[in-house]
Every structure is written in C-alpha cells, then in structure tokens.
Length: 378
Length: 255
Image (cartoon, each protein chain N blue to C red):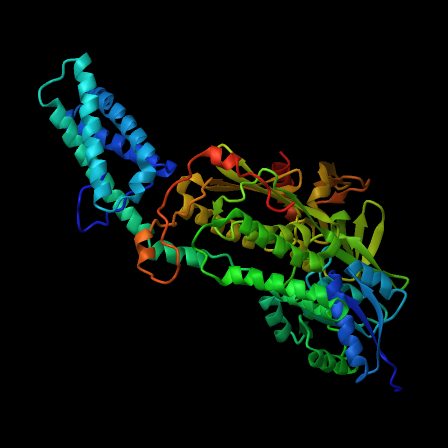
C-alpha cells in the first residue's frame, strides 16, 4: 500500500504481523466512517451510510489482507518502490474484482467503480504514509538506540559475589574455579556485545545454564533448577537476554531471601505457532528488598519484545500459591528479521558480517517447528 | 595486657564466601595472632554460637536471608560482652555511603588481604557501634526484637508480637505465648515497624493482625471508652480518647 513520495521513507510493514493487520483494519474503518460523514451530515442517517460504504469496503479489505498475508515473504524481498507499487496494483486489482462481483449481483450506480478505487487509493496513501513514518520512528536510529539502552544490565551484586565465589575455589578446587571463570567470561561476552539481533533459543538457554551454574556455586543446595525443554523449538529466534535477566530476578527474589532450598523451574515449549517460556520461582514476602528492580527488568523485556515482535510478543507475571510466575509469548521465527526492519542499513555496514544480509522472511509454518522440537541439552 | 589471639567469628549465608574469608584470615594469622572461633550461615546461628563461645570480632555479611547483618549487629549488642562487628558486602552503594558517614567499619567483597589485616589490627582499639548509629544505616526492618534473659539474647519474631506496652522503664512485649521485657523507645518502634502496629494508647502499640474487634465499656465514673479485643490472648487493652479514630479506621479495613 504505497505511493511514491520522496519525503517519506518507503517502508512496507510486515503484513503477517498482528499489529500491522490491526492497524490497517482500524485505519480503513476510521476512514470509512469519515467518508460517510462527508456524504451524510445527519447523525441518524450517518450510521446507515457508513454501513452501506462498509458493505463494499470490508470485503475488499479482507480479500486484500489475505492476499498481502499470502505474499508477505515475497513482498518483503522486493526493492522499493517496486514493493510499494505492487501493493498499489493489488489494491486496484482487488477493488476491481470486488466491484465486478457486486455489479454481477446488484446494479451499481455510475462511477461507483471509480469512486471505490479512488477511496482505496486514498486509504492506501494514508496507510503508506503512516507505516513509512512509523518505520522511521522505530528505525534504525531510534529503535536501535532504544534497544541498546534497554540491553539488560547484570546486577553488580551478582558480579562481585561471583568473583568472590570463584576466589574461594582457587585454592581448594582450581579446576572448578577455571570452569566458573570461563562461564563468567561467556556470560559477560554476551552481556557486552551488540545485542540487537535475534539469537537462536538454544544459545539463550546455554547462557542461562552458565549463569545458573555460577549462582549454584555460591548458593549451593539452596538453588535447585528444573528444566522442561522436551518440546522446546531450539532453533527459534528470540531476543538476546530475554530469559537470563528473569532468571537473575528469580534467584535474587526467590532463592536468596530464604535459607531454605527453593526451586527455579524453566518450561519452554512450542504451541500454535508460538514459543512459550514459563519461569517459576518461590515467592518471598520480602522486607526491604527492592521489588522495583524486578519491575524494571520486566518492563525492559516487555519493551524489547514489543520492538521485535509488536503485538505478537507478550510478557505476563503473576503470583499464585506462593509461586511467582513469568510467562513469555513470542512468535515462532527461524529466519532473522531485524527489529526495525532495516536490511538496507545492514548493507550499509560492510564487513560487519561476512554473510549477505538475509531478507526478513517469516517462517514457513508450524510443520517446520514440529520437526525441530528436540531438546538440545538433556 | 597480654597479647591473646584475636577471636574471630565469620557469618555469611554463602559457604564459598565463608571459606574465602577463612583462607584470608589464615593468611593474616602470621602477622597477627588470631583464631577463628566459629562460622555461621545465618544471624540466628551466629547468636546461638555466641552463647557458647565468645568472640572479639564478628565479620558478617550484610545481605542474608531472614536476618540481615545489620540486624545481627543490633542483637549482639545485647550480649554481656558484645563483639566488634565489621560488615562485609559485595555491592551496595547506598549502604557503603551510610557506613562512611556513620564511621561503621566494612569490607568490600572480594576482600583484599591487606585491607582485612588493617581492619583486624584496629579491632582491639574499637568499641561496638551503638544501636543509635546502627539505626542510621539503611536496610530492611528488623525481623526480631531481642531481649536479654539470664545473659542470653532471646529473639522474638516481630510477626508473633500481639502488642507492645510501655511500663515505667521497660516495654512489655506480649506474644501469644508469654511476655518479655525490652529496653527501647516505643515511639522508635512505632516508626520502625509502621504500619504493622497501631497506637491505641499513649503507652501501647497493637499489631493490626491481632485485633479481633472493639468493645464499648463504661467505667466506674460513667465515662465510656473502647477496649481492643485481641486474637489468642485473653486480656483487652483500652483505647485512649485521642486514638478513638482508629476504632473506625480498623473497622473499615476489616470489612
């Protein structure tokens, strides 16, 4: 849905994204309501007018959304403005088809086709302008700087306690001290690298294991971890550090405040085209601990999920039966899409990555996921 | 004074941290005669241990489950011969600032051996930090009140306290089981534990959790006043005229 306009970045949205679809439906209906108002100023008749216009507009809209959904992966690979012009052509073609279908049933007034197509073009232009502006607002500079600012920060508390735990091992168990230091190096490598691109879920899990191994070192029997990864889609792409900060919270708020042993459980599975991660830890009523820190981590991850997945990612937390639970929902993806969809920007940074930038394509479908559900680590 | 070895106790909920501190203390032993008299994984364990062995120095972590190191320092003051307390902490910028301001000794973890040795050398010249100065340090509210009985420190969990009543020199702590005598200020306790306790009278704080209801009583002079009825204890407590509003306040909450 695009008209060439040099002042606005030509940037097609992801037509398979729920948020995009929702925005298009809402915008078109709002425009229809305005159009009805232009044609009929009396309020009681206005609703009838809106309904009449919608009778033609809605079928057009639905068909068009289905078509765009179907060709979204192909469309995303097209250079601009060809992609945008394709959307315009589809708009006109679907308009023509819907009109023809109506005309065969009910006689249409003269110029009905022309009016419909003009309306469709106007709606198209408005939406292209909107998505162009939105893409610019979210990308690359703003979204990236935001993502960078949002990069999870590890608690200094953890860093110094871990160093102390490693120091305590050097004399008595140098081998274990070595393992712990290497784990720490890996952990901090990830924390300090550029974390804007999605990473395979199994990498994030590995990172979580290293983190928990370090915590286990100092908390010993108090920290018990249960992994439920049998139906985890190991290759699914997730925002980096989407789980580790939550585990850090689970340990800090759920395990450390009690001298009794506690269990942190991690349950990751594939269901209905989505990746679900459910983390649980004992809920402690704490005197004076800063729950604000927990809220900040949750808000941080929620915002990163939104930047990467829009309405398709979510994070919810709740307390039930003295267990604190965080539930993350993400779309199942196996091919990289940059958060701000800035493939062009990627190309502008030569030498950063030897492989050519992969086009932002959505996964083929759930079949692929099911073939890929083996747990990578026990 | 003969140079008796310095008796040190190590308190930390994390075993590796205790082991590390022990190693460092061993390293210091060459330069300064010392003996580690015990290790404890919690404040409560440390207090129990201090009833059987005496220590000159308590090296305690701040951040511990159930009882923080700061709270432990408050309770050990009740011992007949309280040890000097030096705190260890991995990271807490606010606490560290407060330590500096109140001249309370602390060591940053990981601890440097030279720094530990310097701290140990000062210990014989130090006095325990008084409660008033410990109160200035930020931290979670106390989980226990401590009273001295036959030179032992008894911990009374705050959540078991039904009411606190000031009588002459002491405060009576009433739990569902029995009474204890405490030497602290009622006003300070009210501030520290708000909103757990509510003041029903100039000399009395009642735990909201233990309020069962209120009853109107008419005294001998014909003056009517409210009495607090309590859960799990038979006695009732008078509500003063000034504090009458709490009858309605608590009544509203319990609806």
